Image (cartoon, rainbow, N blue to C red; front, side):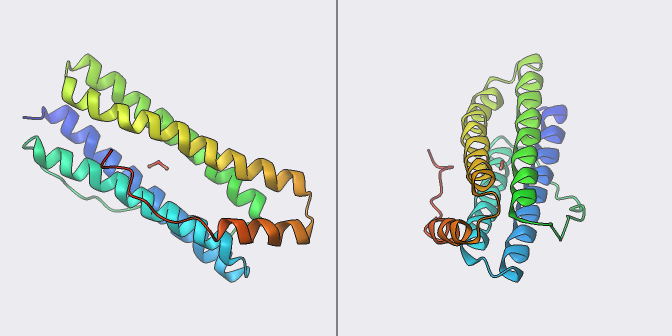
Length: 169
Ligand code: FEO
């Protein structure tokens, strides 16, 4: 059985993961409007990943006899000046999510909830990948220094990204 404090914290994290999904879907819409379908595809996959992060918490709360409560999702930004700004936001956001996950790890430790501590380790590892992926694209964009040809090449590359559900691992 989940204690009430952990249950509330996990429900808050579900909301944060949903916000992330919404944020990246908004970026997908922005990239579609900029005629960059590869970037839009990357963000659409990112959206799917965030939903899978939600569902992993959703299933876990239910498995532990807790109650999932879905709260309103705050509005997200809709416009960016350029792809660099969008990826700066992505990288910054993932760093913030890492902080949230680390905080949850600390709380689960304090509450001596070993099962929650254990499942959070998956998220700790996932955040390393999330930050690295966003930073890698950000660095490539910075190297392009606005070169349109390079941007289209990168767009083509990002079109290749496909969704695989990593949460089962
Ligand atoms: Fe759910 Fe992008 O972290």
